[in-house]
Image (tube, rainbow over all chains, first blue to last red; front, side):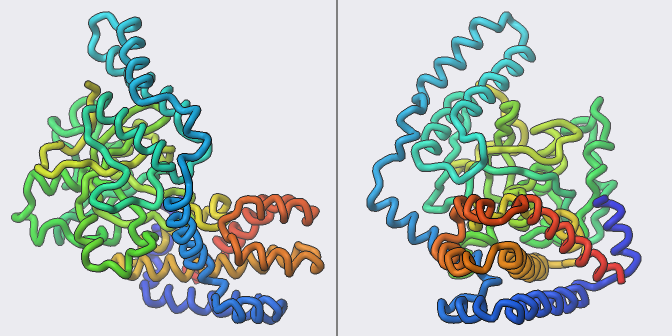
Length: 329
Length: 106
């Protein structure tokens, strides 16, 4: 569907501005119909000083105020008292590992993944939602000791709107003017290269637009292995919905640019360190994060399109943590 | 982060795909997303008021204004609307998706 929709839109060559105008007309029409049929709704929202179309912003303000009040007034929520301590989780992982593992590295890794996934499943609420600070602290310690990655839900005072949500598949990003999909084909030494078939890495295609920070390099000649790694292992987060996104520019945009994040698939324990290179997805997609074709392939396999994950910032002031798959301690 | 009690029922993936294929910059993309977001709130509110008996309109509006994220609002609506509210929202979003895609392909 995605590909056919894309083809059809390309044929019509509707520009962004033309589409914007059509959407604006639709917006006016939906608002007019609502207020014509229900004038009291118009009056109600006018009295409150809110546009019903901007109810999300209104909700953000309410939730922001609640969070501040909660931080000042509340003790840790009752649910956290039933949670295992990080040490308990880690000990369980170690003991399970000793029981099940002989001397095969692959088996060790697989069992550790499964054990971590099982532990996360027991730790996390069934339905994705923003985690509370206690839950996040436990996960930080588990990730540090099990994965060996210093991951933080909050870093330098910054925090995503949610650290637990759904990730969706994204396309490759154009790294420089003139970049093409075929130039993203992995070499035999790259992930998805030898033995795995580059087709699965290329099948998502090349995004028509640029990432949130434009081209990664001004030309092909300026492309470096580091830049290639950033695009190969890129993540998408919803910076645009951060409550203070507009008010704190350009600081936030600079802070998030290529910021490293740890992404953990809670279904199988697979983990990857990725670099934030785009903003999205739109909130009405049912997804909270996005991953490059390589990220998604590693997290869940060639057919993985969407799934629940944890996303934490990587505390890496000296840029020592490599991008890509995370192997277990 | 879900900010509205019906967020989890809103899936407009195909519209997002189209926007991503058209918008050349992040700013353009965000503006288009924002317009779609506002349209869907109008449509959802219209839907609720159409289906909810008028005697409950005021209470719903006050509760929605006070706590737009409150998931109990879904229960409030389901108790007072004969049809399944989740299904109604999904149908409305499918309709909206087809309308937007039609506009694109005109």
